[in-house]
Length: 100
Image (cartoon, rainbow, N blue to C red; front, side, top):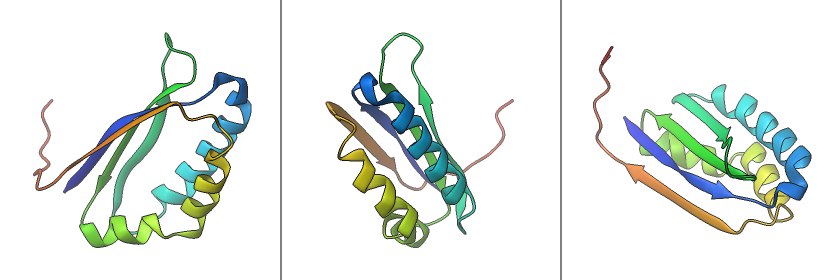
């Protein structure tokens, strides 16, 4: 299991376009083979700040996601979202087991 987690801060002036682009990306990505979880969550206290969280079964499935048409569409749109900060981390080799 590979976990991707981090934050992205974008200009809240573009919030409607951001939310639309993210919803499209999430729908397409969660249908990909090897995707166990994928989502963006908006902060309730920092305008335009999102938490990104992903779970993938292998490096190959992440690699396929990165070059997917829906990821290219999102990245093209994100260029106009006024990204001011981004920090994304990859955690390899996590074994998944139910905690609670």
